[in-house]
Length: 332
Image (cartoon, rainbow, N blue to C red; front, top):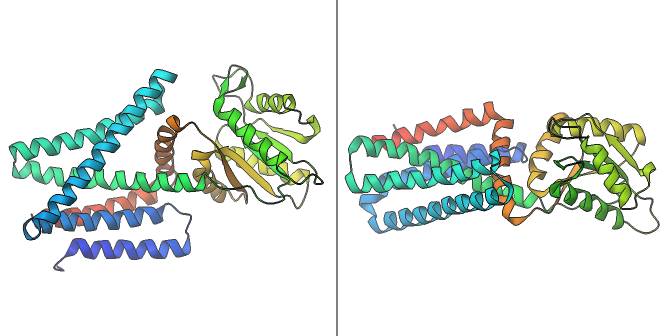
């Protein structure tokens, strides 16, 4: 066995991440591999540096503790604020549950520090490694979401596809209204002597909705002065993948040589881009602004959805974390 297996695992994961970044830079598996590398290296430091470098080990432990405490409290506080504002929606409750889970891990660490125990300590190595890895991966995902959410429209856009979101009665809700306003801004930002864009409003009727999202969006655009002949409705889709496929069929049937820009919420841009590549739709995606209070909860939901999108590959890669965890336990 190599003398430092956790560091060897970190090098292997980092090399895999570098290769993956070169071959498919948009894939989230690249982030997974680099986070595995960082977690493996962290396990090596935690397992081997406590005795040899106690000051360094203590400083790293305190930094990790403060970071986890801040994240856990932020998630919990954000959930409380949003639940009080919008009611107990599943995504908002999940944000609070995630915050409680982070704080619970810290509580277990505090208990072990007080009472000790070899078996308990070994269990905490596993729990801390998994929690640290998932937290680091979430932070990286949030970075992806933040950067991609600030994409700019394609020059000379001919079609703007607006993805549906929830309605407020028979009208667009706040999230959908921001997407529509972002689409209108793309149209008004064009040169004065160029034709106006064609708006493709995409969204079917949900089980809890009184009309299709496409109809509500079309009415909103007409109310903002867009002629009816520049609005195309796609009212069959019930998820983002169908939004993209069905809208692409409509755009292709309208005019050849088009340049389509898809508008969704800023936190949804990265996953929409991944889905567009998966369904073979060559579009550019831009984001509409989101309330800062809602961004964290929405990003956590996107994180779970991105992991689910490539679940077999990502879960398979994540299980490789068992290798450095086992070696860290061995050198305890």
